[in-house]
View (cartoon, rainbow, N blue to C red):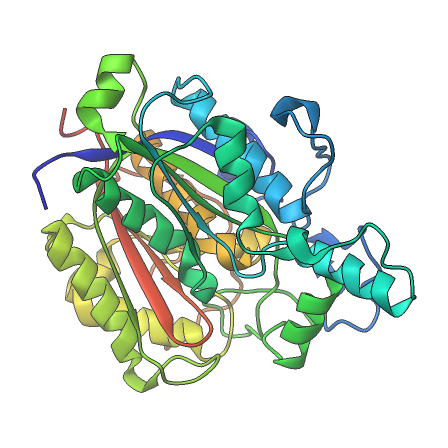
Length: 403
């Protein structure tokens, strides 16, 4: 590794709380919630008929020079990545070596459902599984923006979005590309929500991260993409930088398909590993964007992991889960949470746990209930955990204090 300072210089998103950065941040801080009755398909029979569905959004095929629209998840990715490139003041097609790293849990889930429905109806004409392939998204982005550096797809469950940001930063530090476009995306569909309902991870009530009466999570959809590059390169172009990427870490505790390991050893190790790589002490951390799913076992385990690493400092800083505002965005969860963390350090405020209700003795930190607040956030962590035991953690630092 080098001493190169790598930053997030562009940000784009599609979310249940809006598709423009300022709108998303305003609604998030205000404690607004984007969990509404599902309208795109019939949710009858699911454990919960509400989700974080993207609404009031259309895909412009002509904007990307396409003859037909790709899968919905790829549409989200294309729009978010285009906005990130524009935000970073980068023209397309890109002339420099640009890496591309995408994360997703289910890729084009809507397309494989269409294919299966057509096949079972005996009329699969014109339908292929290509739209459901995990390479559809990155291939579409590469063609749309002229990205010719290294390319990859990460699918390690709900920590995918955090992994791609950290991994892309490493690509830049290692000189594998001049800059990288990285992000994650997923869309809601009946089959995946049916599967998640069968696992009983979905609450039949409401998502209430870190609350004593929590009973499970709720899911959402969307995308968040970033332009990641050396600070000097961004400054030379006149692009603003949201945050410096100090370091990241990833592991897998391999304990259970959904539950965290006893004692939160996996999450403890990933937070400690991230802080070590970033060169941070507990006193340096001013905010933590937690994974906070609202499930019975995860929330106390994550709380214990934070306390295991930060000690007394854990009680002095805000810790919040934005899943209470928009649900769990599956593969995109870590990416949208990294976006919220970058905005927290760049704008000096922390988002709330919007649906927090009743304190739990096992979850005894400051979870920023209901509404956000101003805060001097110099350095922040974003933690993710996924089905199958995957954990990831990202450390970001404000450029307001280190210029």
